[in-house]
Image (cartoon, rainbow, N blue to C red; front, side, top):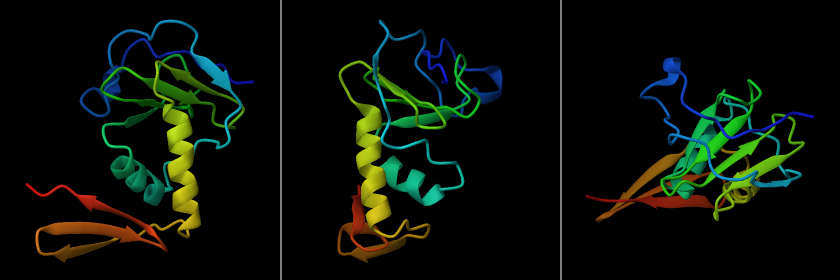
Length: 142
């Protein structure tokens, strides 16, 4: 079984890329069997959807203290989640269940046909992104 621990710091090679908050979150976190193993980086359509449907959540591969292929998610409020590459476990720290939210977005993405390409629609002062069947979101307009 893969061990997931909170990452202590961002490695030098990733500086300025997808930063993790400094320090480790308190406590052991909530452990559970993951419904979803970590989608691979090549599933870019999913990661695009996740980036927009869970705004403010960042992902990080190869976090210090984790398996090389483990994924860590963080948000601006200090919540973190990690999932083992094989989906054997997920660990969530803080009040937000980031990996459970990620699993819900993945279910929506899969139900839409796992789109890898998205269309952008402009209508008046609205910008809408759509992919597959039924997966869409609006972009903020400045």
